[in-house]
Amino acid sequence: MSGQKRQYKSLSIETKLQLLADVDKKNCSKKEIAEKYGIPHNTLSTILKNRDKLERPGLSSEFQPNRKRQRTTDNTDVDLALFQWFKQARAMSAPLSNPVLTSQAELIASELGNTEFKATVGWIERFKRRHGIAHRSVSGEAAAVDQTILNDWRQSDLPRVLQEYREEDIFNADETGIFYKCLPDKSLALKGERCTGGKKAKERMTVLVAANMSGTEKLPLLVIGKSLKPRCMKNIKSLPVEYTANKKAWMTGVLFENWLRKLDRKFLLQGRSVAMVIDNCPAHPQLDDLKAIKLIFLPPNTTSHLQPCDQGIINSFKHHYRTRVVRKYLDHIRDKMPTATTSISTVADNFNVSIVDALYDMRFAWEKVTEKTIKNCFRHAGFHIPSASASEREDEETARSSETEASHNEFESLLNRLSEVKGADFETTAEEYLAIDYEVQTTAEMSISEIVNINNIQSQDNQLESGSEDEQEEESMQKVTTKEARDAIATLRCFALQQEKGHSLFSPIQAIEDKIAEISSSQLRQTTLTDFFKKSQS
Image (cartoon, rainbow, N blue to C red):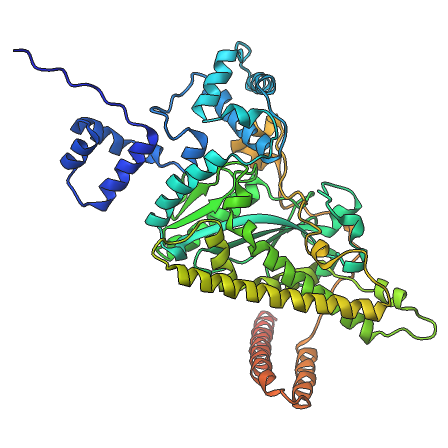
């Protein structure tokens, strides 16, 4: 009797990923796993061999999870460039349709020198299937959230991330635009602006914030301005945050890659394996050669639901920043109270926030964002360990609400005091002022040519070009000597001694005094050494 022919069984991508998770658990042998999924041993070996391709970040958002195979195309270069353009267009909420895809595909092919390529209806449909693009993604409201994709990511991709990485090693990074000079009594004109250019763009910077799921590690801010060396940075050798610049003050793929690679080296030296969750905006390139960081891309149009930074981390940062700016504005008006010849309006108009002031205040604001706030924002986005009890989650939510309410009350109080001092009500509410730059654009849209040459984009886009000096209205910082610094410390010490609760200031003042003495001693040694060499050469 002839043997029965084995029936071939094809597994979906989602099932293969579940199989790999079972292999990692090491609860059973490979033979038992093959039997569980009804596949021969050589098929299991093939799946294990192709593991890297299956677990590629963002796979489930690019391919439908129930797809059996990841089909490729003969025109791979056109396919990849078109998908990059598609992600950019969707991130920018641009209207999409099959004719638009057809037109862009043929433009890309032309840019690549492929004159024989034709984006037929069949090719476009296969392109959409390859990348899991549903019809609703290329028609109707571009920015609408696809609930199916959102649920799939939460039920499939997210659990794997939580299983493979510790809370301390799961990070989220996101950009936000900020009108750093904006004041509550002068903000109405800015409401809802995307601010891609013009005069107001000079008062905008882009800030990259990143923190881990446990809330125990906030990475240093990366701030992008329009000028690398504005006048106010003259004589400055240390900045409170990482700072760079380009003509648009936008995040680009080059800047983001540089930031990631620097961070990758840091984590590698620490012996850590880190998951970096990011959205799929045009400035976030896919990097497959990172040693310590694995990029996890969120599905398109889901960041308002899935991105922890969008659940309140960025809002908390901006809340603390604006609170500090308003407090300094109020102090400025009080310190320079108008005379018989000077009005309150004139005094208020003389208040200025320089780029250096803003960078310092941003660092302060970022330090004020609490561990609880960050942890709860991750939880609100779905990043939580199932073992946490309902009572623990409820306690954390209560603590978050209390903290938010206290901060809001403080801010409202400051605005009321400012309104009293200026003798006028503001047209902008506290909520509107805090959300004034919510719609500000933070990333650059790439042209077809730049997308095609994405691997060489660094040569086309020099990110370290400084802005023109005539755009800067800020005075350069006066050089401060060590003697002037010591005199300032003496003034601070007198101030502390004259306060009823001044004892809390003694330790920080002493720490600064010790550091100034250390710098002074180092400068003295350097001067002595220089004099020695001069005498030796004479």
